[in-house]
Image 1: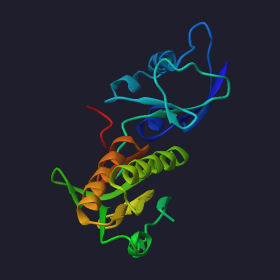
Image 2 (image 1 turned 180 degrees about the horizontal axis):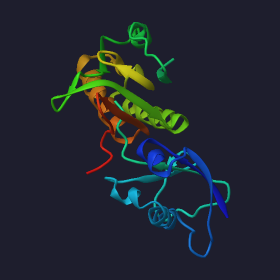
Image 3 (image 1 turned 90 degrees about the vertical axis):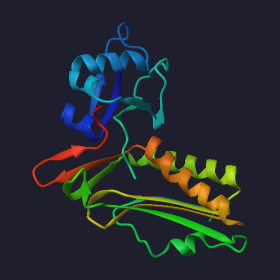
Image 4 (image 1 turned 90 degrees about the horizontal axis):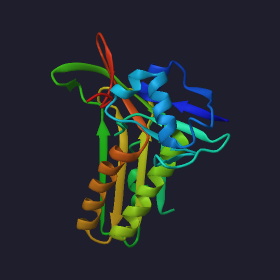
Length: 82
Length: 138
């Protein structure tokens, strides 16, 4: 299964791109929380951030949300507008 | 139109009175956020803002709706700039208009405080020799 990932702010600097197709094995990754763990394994610098959230299809997502194919998933590092 | 919610390259600070003016409003309160010259005694040359635009607009719209419901506002403005902004340039405008002044003062504070907590916009401080994403690390 794959989702479309978007990266912003420092997450974009860490990953090196602003968007990518991200594929994973459904046995390891089903929920938002699983994907966070997977991302932190792949990009350890993400775990050094104050926090980061995932947004699914433009809404903040809880860890137990189950991902669907072709979801748009954005990595939201600590926001700092204003 | 009750709500004005925008993300733009350059903020026009001169239109906000007309956007908030209303026959039922006796008070209009506006907050401008601007680029400050120094952060912790270090000279800032510019701020660079990046937004997840579609989601940021949705979140700004939610904040506007919450404020309208809570303080019975007649009009609300929430606008944020993106891109590189120099010292003294405006980066955010929030405003509210209501029958009496206390509602719009309180609403304005809520609008900017909540925007800073929830809206997916990021600010990079650019100094002479380095640049830093604000609040990224503990």
